Image (tube, rainbow, N blue to C red; front, side, top):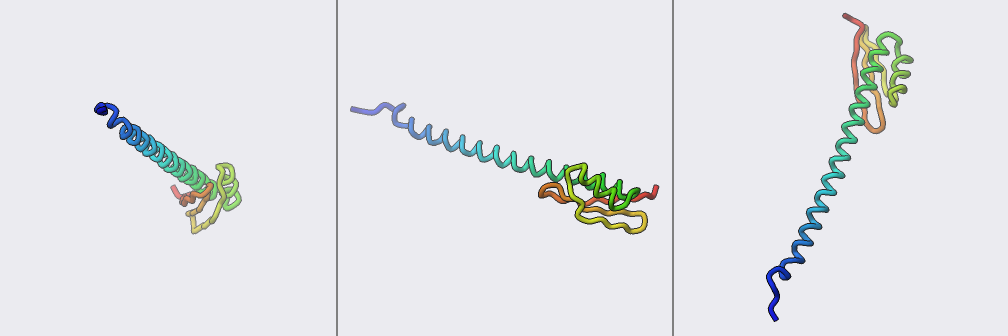
Length: 103
């Protein structure tokens, strides 16, 4: 008996479909990981910006308080003249911000 053409290639289509599905799953996971990292970096930057601005008026205690309010930890606080520079960590992301009281 001879095999029909449609039966001959049907197994290859299943393997190809499984490979495509696996590739799509890997790409979705990688995209989700990247998006999560971007969100953490943005949250850290927002916390650092707010802390730097608060630090220009209230010093280190105000900067630390605002970092905590934004879900972060004040890693460093540097005051040089009118300028304040802070480093804030939120989760695994770290951000630096600088602010001055000068107009």
